[in-house]
Image (cartoon, rainbow, N blue to C red; front, side):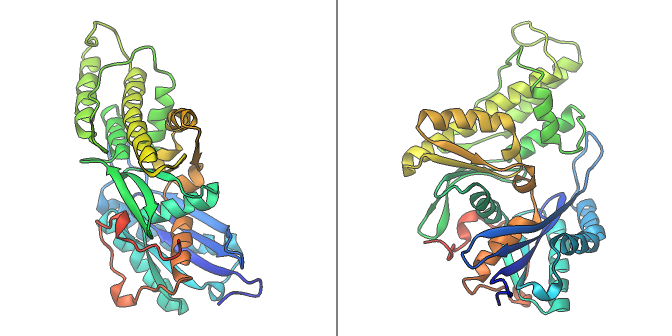
Length: 353
């Protein structure tokens, strides 16, 4: 029920990858969203390595209680003020998802609050719409586990194009391992900073756009080959010297050009002049710049958020969950399972016309 100020309040738990996030959001009587707290703790693996599901799940279990307590303190609310507990059902890594779902179920039982299972991708979209004010954009969802071009129609987020193999963020993360770049604060961020120092040489990488879909595995394989040539003291195909910064620059320019192409095609198809970039890779300034130039040529604009909201966080799960809860949706305890495969277009978006 709404509190004395007419607000409904939800706590959201996110842990589909290496970031454990717990946030609390309030919707006022007008429907406007207000972020009350947004706490996150990241599992960082050593340079040259990725994060394994078992280690990530252990991290989430270890930090869940302290992150939840911090979220409540930052929000200045007690458990009794909450209307529901929201959690990520998927997609994501099985172990980490399950660890956080167990925590959410525990809070639900402990405090006597209903559960709301949330699609991770829809959480990103709804948070992006709330923060930026984008009304009906084409959405480019780019992260470590997902790459999709999406548009809304008839109470579904329809997927117009996607990766055929690995996600764009996974491509960047795995190349960071090849170069043994630090994972702190994030491998993709560190590639972005290195790329800013490059640009003297643009090497030739495969450009793999297939209709509305993309493929990144072959690009990664060729980038790995060039990195091996560089380490052995070799030169580029045209006899030029090149550096890790040049490799990072080349990789970004190639894969971002592919994303711009399929996004522009989706904009033309649905007649939209707005692009909303969500997901962790959406923080990348070069991607925002390239997408912005394309949109401007079409008389449109690009919407994006900063790292507080584009990187995985609990507040996006709280927001999307509360939107669903306000339509009467709840997840029964016996149905509060997780799934690594939960497509964006499987969700019935009852809260939108």
